[in-house]
Length: 136
Figure (cartoon, rainbow, N blue to C red):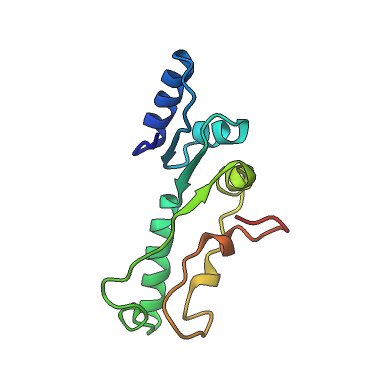
């Protein structure tokens, strides 16, 4: 069963447990409670990454300010592929990086002004979470 957000997914999981139904339940969003449920084996998985849309927008604006027009690197209707599948093997890492950090996440790696490279923007979350040997 797939839900449009974590709250609905957690509610569906509760209903499945109450009725002793055997279903896989997943959702979207990455609320702390949903991540904990994935870690504990409740929810099968979630799709997450929408927390970072604002960060990607700021990277694009920063680059534009410094003369790197994002329209030339993916077009004016740039598709931001920022969602990741979070499952039991990577849910704890996602939770640690997103909710357990005191310092700000470093998004400089995504800037074309700071990192000269050709091609479209690559907002893959695996780079953001590659702060230890574990990654998404």
